[in-house]
Image (cartoon, rainbow, N blue to C red; front, side, top):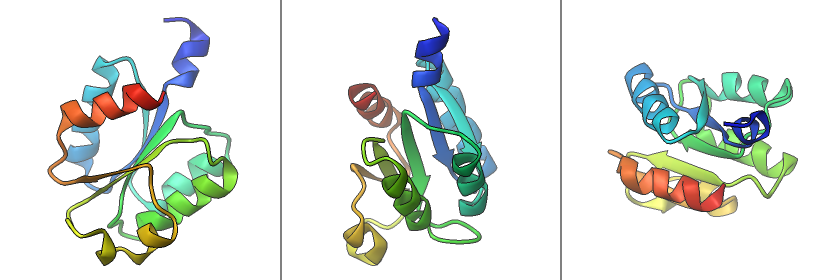
Length: 125
């Protein structure tokens, strides 16, 4: 894969459960994506502030230090063209007021369907 394409497919995965992040990473790598995992909102923000410009982001809403909405908001302020998917265990988007204020491009409920998630990523990158 050419270096430019590899950079273009970098995907920020913000997920505090290490097993879930590892599973998502393996699935994304198998499809040609280059996941960058962050286990908290703070870790994700550090990655974004130190130069990571992802082709897309997958963000869990319930994180140990802040809501995933914080990461979504920061990405939107930086570059509104970056596609963002929110992953949540709650089926009702109204349970996350920050989603209503700053809607993601796609909302997935856990357990996430990997085929559907990867199809979405491929369609937006």
